[in-house]
Amino acid sequence: MQTWQARWLDELVRQVYHVNLSQCRDFAEFKGLLNFMMANLLEVSNSLGCELTDDRRIRRAAESLKVKADRLLMLCNDVAESFDAPEEWRAVMAQIVVNYEILRFEAGYLYQLVVPKSPFGVLRSAL
Image 1: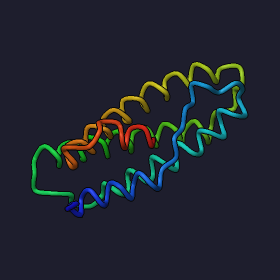
Image 2 (image 1 turned 90 degrees about the vertical axis):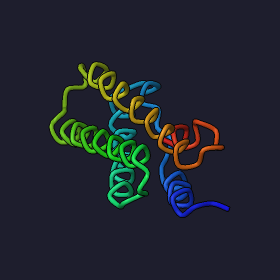
Image 3 (image 1 turned 60 degrees about the vertical axis):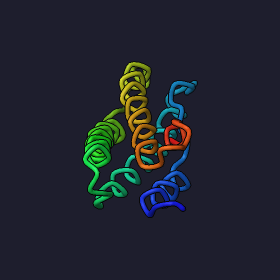
Image 4 (image 1 turned 45 degrees about the vertical axis):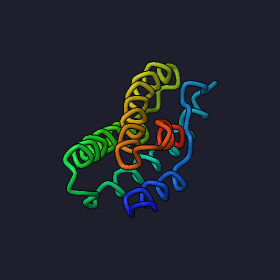
């Protein structure tokens, strides 16, 4: 029997899109995928605004993931609003990719804490 927390995380998995900025070939593709990433980050941040459980480890993991999602979303918003330097997009992309990979790893960890017998990469691979 699944807990409501597991069903909640499964719903989050269904609502996000996998984004791989490291495969961008040009500035236009980078900006397009950045919009998908920002939608994912907003979904994660909004979803983690509720109280998941009394379990400290899960609560800390969720809070940490929310903080990372919020920070990365702010960075992406700043880039989307002010970045108009096609010649420098690869350096900016590299910084965002590193932070997004950390977020994906922590999302996988949170999912595994909530659903202990699940494969590690369920939420991670969705993002």
